[in-house]
Length: 125
Picture 1 (cartoon, one colour):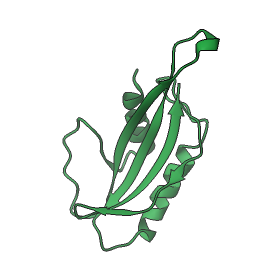
Picture 2 (cartoon, rainbow, N blue to C red; picture 1 turned 120 degrees about the horizontal axis):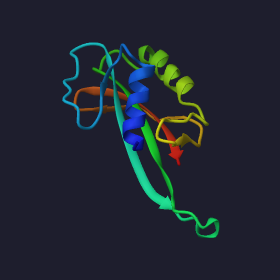
Picture 3 (tube, rainbow, N blue to C red; picture 1 turned 90 degrees about the horizontal axis):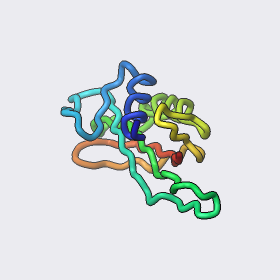
């Protein structure tokens, strides 16, 4: 199982009532309310020549809490806190990948009539 498949399945299971947008899925953002945007950013594999093993897969997982602008980020905070609680360092996925760093909340962004509050975490396998 690839990290994308495992990550997307985990977020769907952890947030069953939330609308979720990720690559390969037809999605129309709702006119009101919140939704999640998921991304996986793969990095080059870390070389392990002394361990006589293949490279270690690594990258960044990102969950963005999105809404229409105008309400500010305060109302988004409970969802962000739930993401931080669910995706702590050490969390494992069905693909064998694991979160290896503390969750980072990034600065809010406004993009294409959306207010975005990104949360990122590093992974490896």
